[in-house]
Image (tube, rainbow, N blue to C red; front, top):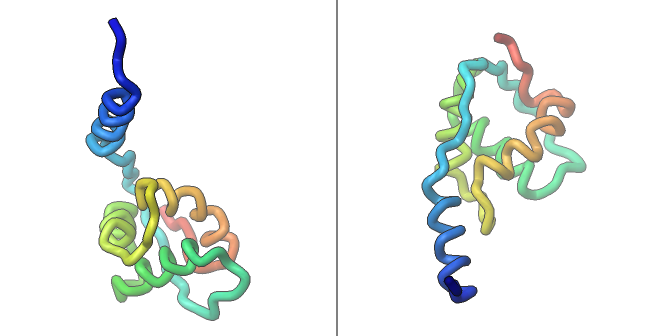
Length: 98
């Protein structure tokens, strides 16, 4: 059985689009301050989170903010956020509280 490369790529894209994000019940405290020395994608994530205008957010609310953000990427937006999450927390913009 031979599969054309374009068919294989199309199947992979379909699988990637249908996967659901793993979202926990964690809550985070949001601290908005000066954004310095961070990757542009991390800055867009921070701005999206800050745009919710709440002091405490659930991971579901963060997920919705990221998915509705202006983040430009070929990858899944949530994957980009998860990649930068540690930096965002270390910079003091988010604190896990639960």
